[in-house]
Image 1: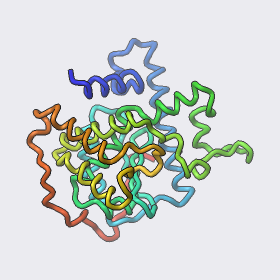
Image 2: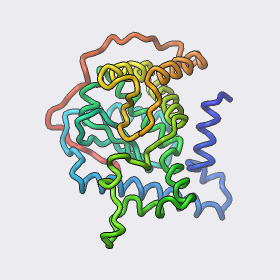
Image 3: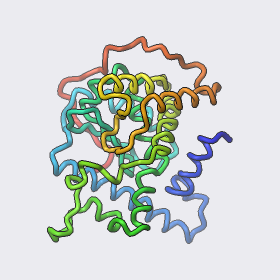
Length: 277
């Protein structure tokens, strides 16, 4: 078993315990159900907070292509217990992030800079990778265990008391709960290109999009604004290329051949469609 597969299995079974209910003893079933309910609640509450802040775009010409590419990435990421929702949000600089329970967010600034479906697929794959690998919930649980934060739900739920109010507006500048380590970013890059390849998109789209971001924002940029300590873009590109070379059975058929650069397909008047709320 290669290292990536081992890490993915470790995260799925050890952190999120996704898709393993049938093999668990009866006494463990409520624990798994509780973890899934907790992740679902966090994801739903973040969505509700984003909507309260008027960040959700209910209409965007990019919704059809985001749903189409997202559906293929979601299928490639199976098995998972959560339905996937792909939501477009506001923002002047390219940004994407994901939250537990199958929620992936991208903004129109990012979508306008994607040259083709392959680049979009790798962005959505990276964000789905964070969910599959359990990165967000792991960081929240680490913080909770260290008594640095309140219970997970209090990160996202508005308290009745003004002194205890804690919402995304307050952490918008840093998005601390998404401040992944460099290793987690590398893992999500690897998972992203793997999911893109499985969904029959060119995984070189990850590198192409990094190159675009470097031209826009410099060599320490990333498409997730809220990650405070981005690995350098050249380093991420080199690591993805090394990952391709380590698994020729999966990646050798793909080439660094960016032939389509016209941008993403747009459908005027397209609206948001959720699989869960």
